[in-house]
Length: 414
Image (cartoon, rainbow, N blue to C red; front, top):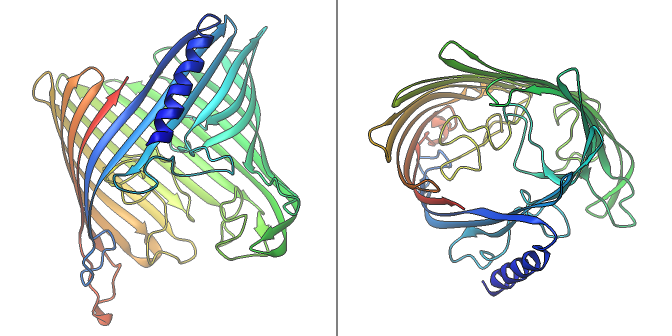
């Protein structure tokens, strides 16, 4: 933990010395959670039971350097399980510099009618199905035209800074978007092309690599009567290929065809209805050929790996789900009821189809209770139960076993 405190003190000192030159806001979030997970392997013959405490601390900064220049940054100081020797270091390393995958550091500069955003940013877009928790090194230029914001960008997917890793994987894209001031109404189109041509050294072996993938995302958000509707469609295709088919391939996650050489697609629609203390929501999601939704897509407690209860990201291939052409589907309903100014109770029911071709399914039941200590602090208790179907072969004396997670957490924003 000494490293964490040293970093924190250095950060605060740096901000203090710069305070005379900029209007600086410092904030962040903290979470401590007790997590109990049982039978996440779905195997009744294996006793799979874990109990851990988890801690997370993220520090964020916003500096208004001038009227047309702002700088944003966030850094994960703590992220991990209590008692782990790596608890005091960020997890999810995304490059050799050692920053956590969701850390950001970028500047926004206004030049006449244009806005330039440069640095490590989260890929935030639309209704957050495509967006993930990973930061991306990006250069983006935006301007308003005809009531729509138009943007062009380039970002880095794979960085190879060693002499024998000759080609990076770069992406080039275009976005056009219109969002109301209250953000209840929005629509947009997102197009991109990823490419790399050259030789890569993978696990000591030189292999030829040709990445030439492309994708599209369309989203819509509106209020129809008392219902808030959101919809999004994503498509990824191309001819991204590599001669190395092992899991160590530098192109293990491409923006083109997947390992089954097929295009991928994701679609989801949600509806939310609120009246006084009662909220009702429903979600329909579909994914084809291993299209995986972003971490922020979390319609159930067990969906979206950024959640403490979660077992997978929607569309992700689970154990035994490895056949070509797998499609996934999710139908979820949820209720929330505010029984007082501070207490909220909730329940959810969902039907998962993890891999349609293999008959892998599951029924999930969620329960939750939250107590708002004050505006920035919430204590919560979350219980999720998933009954799987088709994962284990009874002929091999293996049977499906229900998975369950129980989480209590203290979450503070400051």
